[in-house]
Image 1: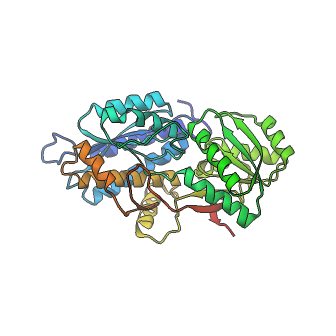
Image 2: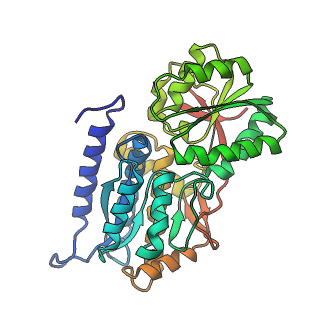
Image 3: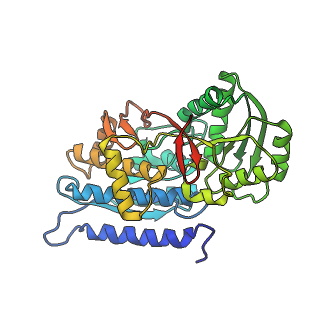
Amino acid sequence: MRDNIFGLPRLAAAILAAAAALARCGGGEGEKGAAAPVRFGVVLSTTGAAAPYGIDNLRGLQVAQEYLNEQGGIHGRPVELVVHDDAGEPAQAVALARRFAGDRRVTGIVGPTRTGTAVAVARVLPSLRIPMMSVGATGDWRAAAGEFNEWTFRSTRVDTYLIPPLLRTARDSLGVRTVAIVSTGDDDWSRSTLAVYRQTLRELGMRLVAEETQMTGDADRSAQLTRIRAAAPDALVINTLASDAPTIADQARRMGIRARFLGTAGFTTPQTWKLAGPGVLDGTLVADNYDPGSARPIVGEFIRRYRARFQADPPPYAAYAFDGLLLMAEAARRAPDPADRRAVRDALGTIRDFEAVLGRVSYRGRGDADKPAVVRQIQGSGVRQVP
């Protein structure tokens, strides 16, 4: 197995093996004297273009599993994770969802990571009749050709609600008036959020002066960036995955583009920032819902546990997964029988003001919960408040 620049394939294999070992430690059905576990099937993108997100997801799930089991699990039954990689492929994600649905020992599905894979799985959930909690899908659901159904939930922040505060902050605090956008043409999330950027720019009275498209993993965007340079925007929205966004920013600076960078998911994985040269991302404006500076106890507990396990600060996609598993476990606790998928689904729909890392979560008739937006600037290896 050959590593890419992040060492992700080998890292993913190691993390998956660790997850399997941790699950086995929880006890299993049929073990003498051990309570039968409550199982959740996990579908993540730990390889492929979204691997940085999927690996962060998996680490967040491991921290959440440990936390839940130390708290006594679900009515004394340990939480067990059965983890599989969908490589970011919708067909593979659907096949895994079908496999989990066919295993009556699995209470629900945690994942997938990507918007496209989550939408694909959501379409088959009414026939599979198993609840899903996506821990990575952040795109505009309708624009990605998906519709929430009663079995579909997300723990993530959603770019539909982050883009307006991101652009408003750029306009009001930094004087940005003209904007260019680079999006990814073969990614469902990027295509869905592009429509939100266009609409929000119009509503805020900001001008879109250039719009360009790249494909996942493109090495050279010089043609697109040449046209953007000619338009001389105040800011460049880099609406791509984290494996591409820093390299686009790096190439833009080398080509003499001085625009401020703006984005959401493309800049929420610090391990990919090293793809840009020193100082290139300084000042980049990023919107998210994860506030590591929050004084709420659950945030501090999450950060403490993550640091102890991985010797690093937790990134947003780890927080999304941590919250997702806690929410699924809470629903299983509320259900008369944690193995009753319909009861677990119904319990998810009744959750109100659940104290999660991203805020107090309530599901009110749909699979998204409202969460406050946080807008920050990248500075060095961290982020800071916008001046």
